[in-house]
Image (cartoon, rainbow, N blue to C red; front, side, top):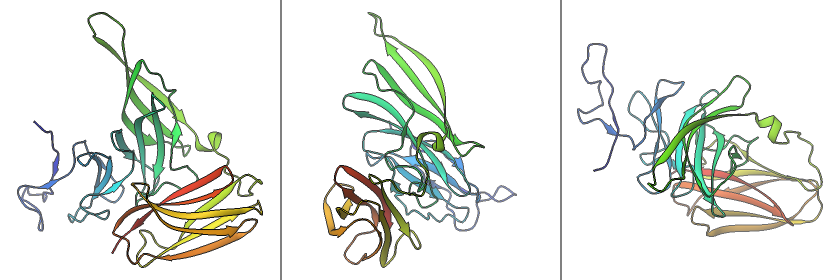
Length: 269
């Protein structure tokens, strides 16, 4: 048996709104939350990797019918209200054998807010004897995040579990260096122009280190699609044609010595 949520729009009189069918629209396997523009947002994990899906009151889906991938395959994710038209995302994943919960804010197009890393911020220490699943997340008045997750421990012979809820409060400025001036070991990679990208994706790269660095583009399977080597110590802009790329999510990456930074890029037809 598979649990599946569906969404439908009704008029004030209770009839089905124009453009909608009586069967509604399949909308993932997780509960949806309202958006600031009157729509709904939800996480759909039917394809393995959690995808962010958005539906507007007219039934349109700005991120496409399948949404965009926002967390690694096999992880458990939840989404909640964010700043403006954006969202907050929390997910749990296993890294180096330890299960942990991470959080990051998303823009309306599914991309990470520029001041946060694509890998998110760790809000729970990983432990092998604990299971952790995020259950709720939202932004707060201090531009941070409120996260709630379930934690359980198997510690008895009957293999039963005790469950508790843990709250944490994350302030980005307390965890991330938001200073625009780059130190010699820092890289900056930003998305320029309209996103999702159509026809051309534009990137801005900045580095204070004059050493050589690489800028590359990858798909979500990790395959390298493009690569350029340039000198650091300055700001450069790249305009890469999207011809030949399928619509979807890609990863732009800049690396200089042992330092790297990446940004998700959504490409549409």
